[in-house]
Length: 322
Image 1 (cartoon, rainbow, N blue to C red):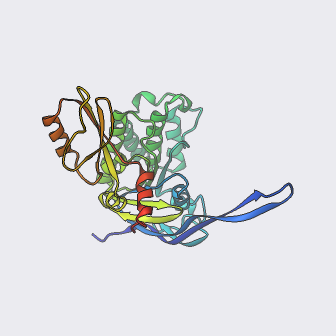
Image 2: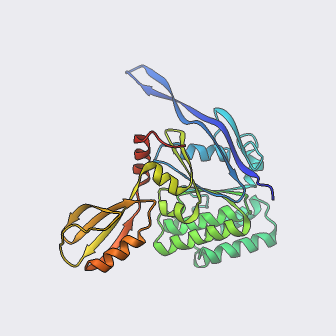
Image 3: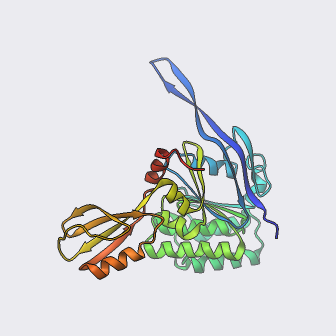
């Protein structure tokens, strides 16, 4: 089957005019380049992580992909449409979950928002029922359907938003921090739901997140944007190598001991019986854990993922990789 690119960006830019006061009566106008010549393709059925620090240009990119913003320059197509010029037609092909901003009706029960989406997107009745039943079951929403949206927790509302974005079977789904505010079990449910959705319906997913575990468990490909420029596009392991990033193994021993010695890691901090060991993020923690458990009086341990901002900072030090 021929591979079809559902998202196409060619040298896309977005420039904002910003005015700031320079005196009591004077204002200075300057240009801020939020997105600076970005090009990439996303084929149908791919799940891509789109990451970067706050203010990097992620949200601006997604707003251009949905038609909310018009590019200042370059070419952009989603599912064959020019988003800013064909926004109404494109809406039938995309679903959007914008982090802290809900698409649900604040004062109405959750189910009423779904009924409104049913009418707004003109979803056939049988398809609407099937999609809603599936989302309710897999996202554990049955007990929430009659609850006003304003009474939902952030995690509950996020699951409700994901369901609302999928009722019309979009070709492309944009997700902004989809696991924010969720507990460990709920995060696992949402991730499994997204994996199943992608596998069964070939839904193309663009995911922005600060949780590298989301990326590791869902995406084979990751793109890094910073200061409006695409710094990296490839596998997550390659990103870690490019940024020489490290994970941290936090080891709790029965008592205070000299620094733990294990090949492939180094002790970076000790506080009483607790020790912090750094090791390459592209390496597996399993052999380190096995060695420490066999050689030391271990009480507990945990693995901490590298911070995305730190990875990007290290990439800058090495002049980045594309």
